Image (cartoon, rainbow, N blue to C red; front, side, top):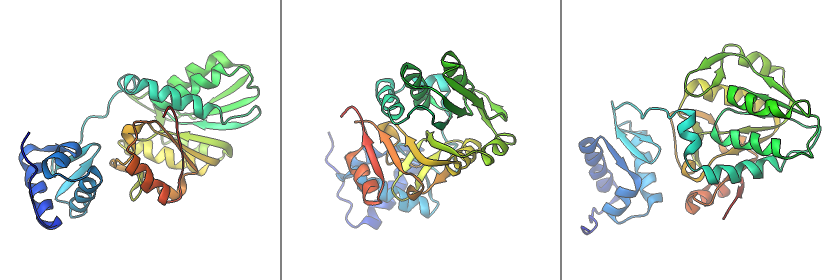
Length: 267
C-alpha cells in the first residue's frame, strides 16, 4: 500500500483532490481518505468546499468532475435488495411508533416498503389511514383492508420507481393533516439537510413533511452524511431519524449536534 500523500495545508490538499477528480471522473471518499491519510469526515469537508466553488460535484460516496452526468437512479427493485436486513429493522422500528386510529403518510421507496410490511404484520393495529404516493406500497397494504384505509395520492407515474408525483399529488397533500409522515431519501447531512436524487420526488417529500405533525426520516446507513441533487428539508425540519448500524458514527454525531433525535436500530 503506498504511503499517504503529505499535502500540507488544506488549500493544497484540495487542489490535489481536484486534480484526481478531473483525472478519474469519479473518486470515492474512502479512497481519498486512504490516499491523503485523513479521516473521511475531513475528506467530505474538503469535497464540500470544492463543491461550493463549483469545480466538482458532490455525489453519494464521493465526487464527480463538473460536466459529468450524475449516476443513474437505481430502480425500486435494485434499491429493495440493497441493505435489505438493515431496512427491514428500520421498517419494524418505524411501524412500532404507530397506534390504532392514527393517520400516516408513507413515502415511496424501498425502506418505506418495509415499513408497510411491518405495519401489516401488526395485527393489533385497527382503523389506520395510510396515504401513499407509492403504487407498490398501496398494493402491499391492500391485504390489510379493512383494518387499514389506503389512499393513493394520484399524479404522474414515474417509471422504475412506481411513484406518483405532481401535478395531482400536491392537491391531496395540501388538504391533508396526518399524525405521522415517514419519508425516505438519498442523503442526510448535518449542513445540507435531507436530499434526494430525483427533483420531482423531492417536491412531493416537501409537501408530505408539511402535511404531518410528526416528521420521520428513514434512511439506511449508506445515506448518512451524503448529499444528493435535490434538497428536501433542513435538519430542523425533521423530528426523528431512524437508521441502521452501518451509519457513520461521526456523521451521526454531527447530526445530533444539530439537535436531531436519532434512533439507530440493530446496533
